Image 1 (tube, rainbow, N blue to C red):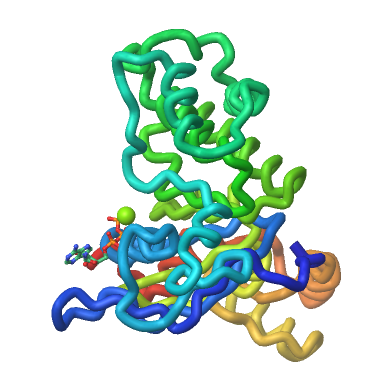
Image 2 (tube, rainbow, N blue to C red):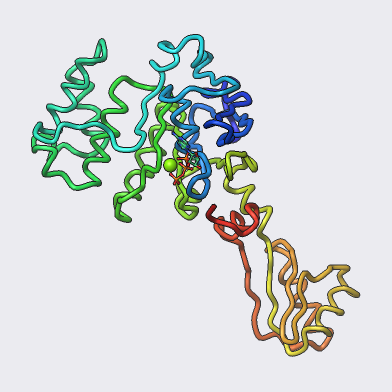
Length: 310
Ligand SMILES: Nc1ncnc2c1ncn2[C@@H]1O[C@H](COP(=O)(O)OP(=O)(O)OP(=O)(O)O)[C@@H](O)[C@H]1O
Ligand SMILES: [Mg+2]
């Protein structure tokens, strides 16, 4: 969001992780703010889970540091973790207990969790109707929601979910997106989600950071990401070369591509009528005008050099 509060909720400073001689995370630095949903996007093996494990203290960094609400994960671990709720890989659950019993069990380990709070999180993840059934009877999506409820129990100001949409159906993904959006906006929570699914990040996140082979390729808002790659308009015409020449001469525009029966321009939507008029006046016959906006997926492939996997 444009009105980001000044203080970041999570700061990564030159975070590096080596396994033996292999550098898996290479000098990652970025900031995440309360009130936003941040997407950590990258192909399989890029280093998303490793980074998240370091943020939540499940793995040590080789170099660098991470701060959560100003508390160093290295120096002030307890305070830092008090701010964090997370689901990394499969959350631990007791299958022979009910969802509710699982939450009560978990709540016992955290000081100050009231019965009301348990009720609140159950409502938040929409599990009220099934919360008294045993977890072994839950579908994957319901288990994910119970995991989310568990992660939210202690009112974390930072919520981190590793591949949260894995195994969810479109309805489940839609609901999750709404929960996360509400949490970030209403409660000011900094939400971090990882995924290799580009189309989902596009819908779910305010900003995305792209990671490939342990390196951050850039952090952008989703709209910036789209704009930089977008704004292309294709004109289908009787004579591509002639039409391209007309817009060059009359409008000083340089076509991106020229084909026998079409050409493409990088122009704003509002400029389309002027181009159409100019072409028609110049004797070009127009068969079609089409906005070719790049999807995040196209842009992602462009940024990562068209390579999705190791
Ligand atoms: N404990 C470990 N020992 C050695 N190498 C590891 C270890 N954990 C992860 N790696 C390596 O680190 C790299 C990043 O793995 P990571 O699990 O962070 O990727 P990811 O982005 O989460 O991928 P995916 O989308 O498949 O979940 C991989 O090359 C992986 O093999
Ligand atoms: Mg992973």
